[in-house]
Length: 363
Image (tube, rainbow, N blue to C red; front, side):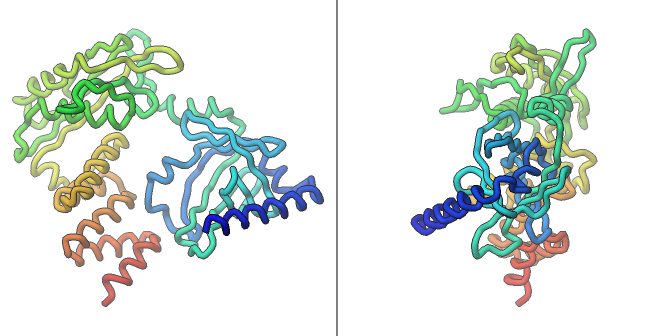
């Protein structure tokens, strides 16, 4: 298999060299030069992307320069690469082949080339031309929306995956570990606060709390934003204060900065019976989705279903959560519910769900 791929790439390379020498003014190559920012990703057949993790792992900006040099940018990380075009074929790096579906001065669309793969399994990428530099785009897209101003005029950043404090916490074996990954900081700080809060698990409740970690690593300005039972407010504030020795300051662009957190805790029937959520918070959504995936891995399908359902209520297009919830139902042999989710997804243009519905539900 590897030998076959190698031969294919070598053949493509030899053909490419011959074509490049005979046509040095390749039109697509000249049109491609410039900066392109990601618009969205779908499947080649037009259906929606089922896994949002793919979108998050895809380059936010592509830079194509002269002499076949390029840069792939994902968030704040940049990696140099090489690229070549032959007709409507684009080769990025050493082995990533794409078909250029559309290329204008304003729009670039290309799709994967994988042999013997149906269109509904091939990803199609949509990018838009921009005059912005990579640094300017990153600031506008990921940093500026998280900037807050304090009363004294200082800059305050909302907790986000690019600007966040480190956290020293965890339990048992992991106690005292310093976490410098965004997901870990969120997970362990949230779990430590929730554990110290110790709210009655079966009792309905909703609490929203804000707090800041200063550029000196000092916890401050702990404030209840919403509470379903004020009797427990001081208990939650105390739980947050118990984390005061666990924070290390955040930095941005080489400078220490202040960061504000907004955490939400839901319990009991209110969590399970809430018909619809009136807001969407990406950080909260990702945390719940990861907790659901963990329960799925442990085969605790009932608990996973409750968490995936919460994701569905939070987000109109929670395609990933719907697929996983259907998997849980199917594992529990509740085929009727699994079929309902697959049918809903197929109506939304998901070919994979349509095939699953046909295979398992039309018997």
